[in-house]
Length: 401
Ligand code: NDP
Image 1 (tube, helix red, strand yellow):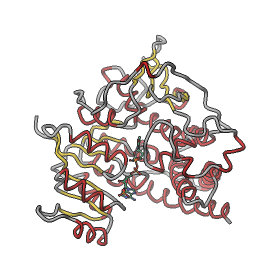
Image 2 (cartoon, helix red, strand yellow; image 1 turned 180 degrees about the vertical axis):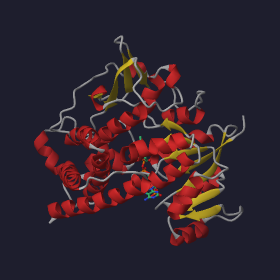
Image 3 (cartoon, helix red, strand yellow; image 1 turned 135 degrees about the vertical axis):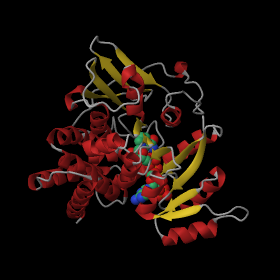
């Protein structure tokens, strides 16, 4: 088989770095074609040097100059592309076979759409593309004959437990043999904290995930369970399942990554250490299994598997996601945008932890009450996303004032 050329959107992030680790184990199977970064140009230089990437994408001319200055002597510079246009061009580059979509947030949308339209194998780590663009994104995947493989560990787990005939397809209706999907959640760092103390938790505490090492935004989303809410919406689109057939279960050990319950009562689950290299290797190797670098899970070190019902008073963000999914795509776009804004403000200590869900709810109420927009394409989604961000910033500001 020819070496697969891989483009990593968001190479300097947690998923991007893990992807490079898995690729480095398989020089016969994968080559790094393109890497992208936003702030961390030093790391991009190191990654591009080590992986011999042919193209890099940086946000602007200043970052380009910095990359050029930092590039060591001895080898020619990779081609440097710039900005959103650069991201879209590498995602659709005729030389690229596989696109890892690991830019955090809605910033990933244009380049993921480009990959879909160009018919790439998309390893979808970014969850915001499906949450914000849902059906519109899936249409782009179908029209472009792209292949969509979920990397988010829960969806990847479900994907691995699906009936064989669903392998490699994005269904447009629920499979008749599936009763429900069960998404597992760790419950994050505040699962057992007295509710009254949530008022005072800090960004540092919120980012201390008990089981996974991840970027800051998704770590805060795990603490609030907004992350699980986004995953419910993602699962709805990926597996054509209605919201009432997607159950969330807190499983503090994070060893079962999700489950599929069939109509005969059988439940298939996928287990493993909480390490993103496993789903990344699954996506890269699909349909074959390849080494991810993980050693065997020590089952004797884990003598119990617990399951709890999420408390919606503690995790209002989860309720909001179910409600948004039932309400409209406008509500889903707004949920995602407002959450990104509120998490960012929380990380900057501008709002308190409980304000995150409150701002999201306020913004959805405002937008859904006023906007009866039909979302026909990516431009509509991006425009609505921008408006929702402006409104969410105002609500954050009001709480900070
Ligand atoms: P990180 O914050 O660690 O990394 C984000 C990446 O996106 C970095 O490469 C960053 O560049 C880049 N980036 C940030 N903003 C922009 C922008 N405006 N334009 C272009 N690039 C940008 O995130 P994670 O790796 O943790 O997560 C990536 C995605 O994968 C998220 O959508 C997350 O929800 C999803 N995911 C992550 C999991 C995990 O375990 N980490 C698990 C499942 C899903 P730079 O660092 O140079 O600033």
